[in-house]
Length: 387
Image (cartoon, rainbow, N blue to C red; front, side, top):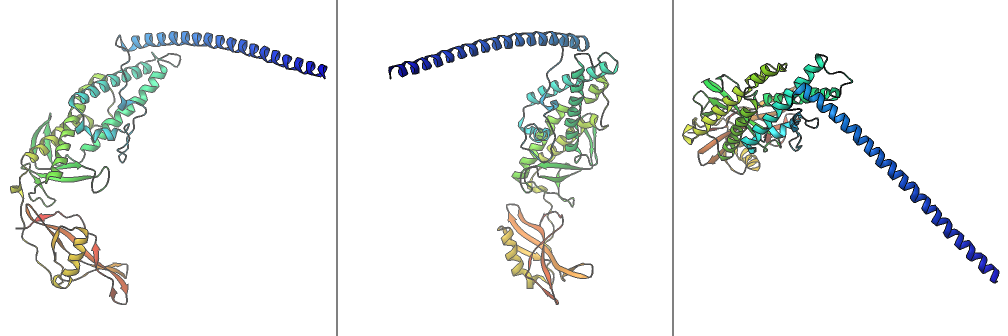
């Protein structure tokens, strides 16, 4: 029994010695690997330093002592343009449509940064075209990056161009000043009615007053007026972003992607000037009141049901007027689909009684019978106040 016990004890001791030896071997191996890793990191760092030094030397030769300026976020590869998504902070569209919340100083800083980087990109590409930068040059990858950045630069100003395309109807501008206003359109951006990114188009007459689609004088309530003020502020920021773009083109020789780009400053000035003037003249006295619409022969028989439907849609409706004297029967080919009558919702506010164009419809059920009266679709027609 004693021999057995001693034998087992020796086995345990040998196992412990083996574990210690293995651990020592592992520590030695780890130490060697650590030394090798540090040596490699040191070598890689030296290679990077040599490469960075060569790159900087090449940059200095092409770009001068100022070197490569920082890339603004609008020209970074992550920047994009999505007309419908205003939640992405890297979306150029998100930035442009919220410019009213950005200070003049910050907008100017971005413009300066974009100008510097754009000039740098153009110089690099010109150097490559002239054979000063080839695939073995450390600046070759920078020229590839410059191509991407200039496309982002184009995207940025194309997005601005899209913002202004609706505001150039029959308005003359010269170096940021208004020469004549026959009629103008303005764009009010808001987040109601059609979800995020919805907007409304309005009109301004030759006397720089807000008018409806029929050209009649109108008055913006506080909500729409605030949207219009925000639009003016955006245009003031656009002027900073677009000032003297023509001079920038002439300085760099960069090929203009759109002939309209050099006039963006004037368009923004027109927009801010015309809409700003209309805001100053926005008073209830501008409202042009029209005669009360006359009821048609179907008014009396349909009024009660039509009014109930109207109040379901808008609790502020005080009355309705049906102007139709006969049903407007609609067909798909030779088959009747529905019939409609037309009229107005009447809504009272602090300025009087407003008429809102509406329709009521009955779906055809066959055998000369129609279903219950319901709200129908209407085309675009301006609301108006009655005398």
